[in-house]
Image 1 (tube, rainbow, N blue to C red):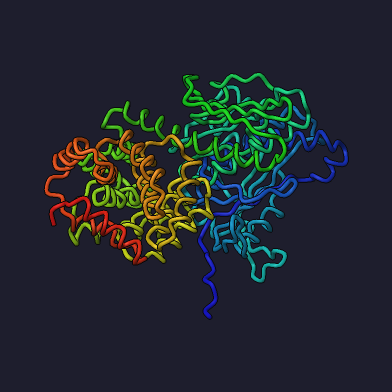
Image 2: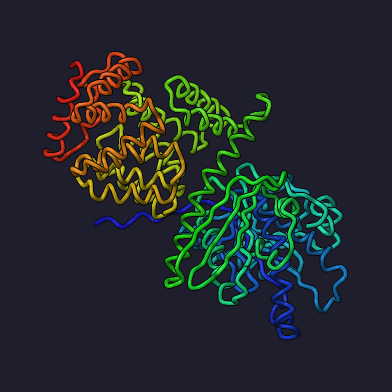
Length: 599
């Protein structure tokens, strides 16, 4: 059997620690740990705003990954500038000085961790950096020379511990020099005075939930809920999520949401509370737009305290399932208020999503055009690539329109490209799996895509819905119902998901299982949400005829003819041709016979 392929990539790695940290801890253990947390609360924001990812922290050390060396060096300069200013009023023997090493190298990917010589060299360069200084490898230096406002001194070739070859190193001067060469990097009292620039994607901070019960035990539960929500939100690659350490600096403080937004550089803030009474607990959460203070949505969950872990999971699923769609709708509204001349790739993508969700053939064509315009601005923006591929699924399955060979090939090409561009983005993989599930016969590939999406982010409703459809095609309607139920729990109010995926899938699964009452309930709800839904109209027609409601049946038949002129039985049969189980195909043939559509 061939060995599994090891995932590698080229990255800028930054390693940092605190010079003399053991000595500082020996002098004042509690005070030193507290001071480091305060510094990191600010430097974590700097890292995020330079596109960095915190790989891991180890005591006083931190390992970061950046997409470019320029970002890594500019981040290091901003951090050292800030630290020089924060240390000005601190006695010299109590100052906390960071040492930073930066390398550009090949890394091995191990889950969320990174390994290899590229990482080891950055760590060894950190060890030879001066306190308050930055040391970079020659590979990093060649990428930043002339591109950053920093002067580097050539240290020559260095023999680094456990590195089998000499590494040429360059050092930047620290302290006063950083303020001289980068006076605008970050001013003193950074948090109070300078609003951070908003990232180019939806940004959110989750504040510590208030413990309203007075029971200290609930403090731990509340913290666990917040940490789980932060972790779950962080799995959405489309979101910028402030780390726990930064959010928790607001614990126990009366906060001004607008100030939090400015200090953390986020557009949205989630706050909440935990209240315990007589063996039950109530958790509330509200999503707020920081700049205006307006409420986007609120969520309330009640549960038993018998199993705290189950309750914690339930709260996380419910809160994340509610706020992510609400947050994206708010982002779309903001994009629509901008002048067309200022629209970015991301704005175009959001506008496409808004048109997509209106569910009509005309708005679908407009959505396609917005996605195409987004890709003209950035051809490699994975969400837009995936979204454009899914338009062809809607065209075929919601509107019953035939796809030419060219359109079919284009949809599958876009789907494959999206998965290739974003192999670690659960949402992009979910959309790619959707297109593969409905427009190809390769259900094995679709299964691999959706299972990876769920492993990366189990809180994506679409991934569970696609898994439900795959199970229908494979002849497992019971499992399909379970998957659709999971999708509903995560996203119970999103009309796009309910109309486009969950209700049509659940109704078909119930029909195949012979659960007549549940089938009819799903169809009624589907038509209530979307009176022109093709699946709902066809099922509604069949139900009306079986129940002898001739007048209702005739109205439904006329509506189908008006909305879907020329619809043929062969077209509908083609929609369900991926069903593999013979007895299920027979049930659908009987259903089509009862509909009596023209061939």
